[in-house]
Length: 266
Image (tube, rainbow, N blue to C red; front, side, top):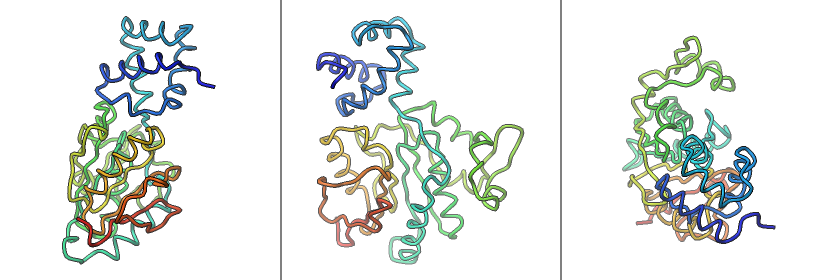
C-alpha cells in the first residue's frame, strides 16, 4: 500500500529538484516513502503536505532530508570479493595497449572510502592510475578532500594495509599522500550527465536500487559509453542489469556484479 499519493510524490520530487538540484523524478516512489515516513514522525507532521510546508521554514530539517536522500553509505573495501575480482581482471589487462595508466571513477562515492580502496588496490598492484571520486554532496566530499577519516572506519581493514596507507592520530586517520594524490574529488550528479570518459574502471554501486527503471536504463547506457573497450563496470551486490541488457556488455563475475565492455565496443 502506498503511503504517499501521486500528488504528494510530485510535490516531493519538485522540492528535491529545487532544494538539491537532483532529479527528483528519477527516484523510486518506494525509496521516497522510506525516507519521508521517519521524518514525518520526527517532526510531528501529520502528512506529506504539511511536512513540505514545514521544510520551507526549517532549514535544519531540509538539510537532514537532503542528506537522507543522498544515502551516504560506504566503507573501506566493502565486499572484499568484488575487489578480488577487480584485481584479477586488472592483472589480465595490465600491459595491454591503452591500459598503462588506469583511469577510474567511483560514484556516487559518498565520503570516499571506495575511491581510497581502489587507489590502494592500484598501489598494491604497482599500477599507475587516477580515480575520479564523484558525489552530489559537497559535505560528503569534504573529508575526502582533507584525506582524513575516523579511526573507527579502519576497524575491518587488514593491519598491513592499515599501517602502510594510513597515519593514525587521536580520532582521525590520514591517508598517505601516495594514495590521496591519486584521487580527484568532484561534485557531480550522475543523473544529469557524466564528468568522465575513457574510463577503465567504473564503480557505480548502490545507486540503481534507488532509481526508477527509466533512470536506470539511461544511466547504464551512459556508463557503458564512458568505458573504454574492455573497461570494467561494477554494480552493487543487490543490483542487476536484468532486463536492462546493453549490447556489448558481458559478465566477468555475475555474483559480484562485475561486467566488462566488449573489446570491440565504441
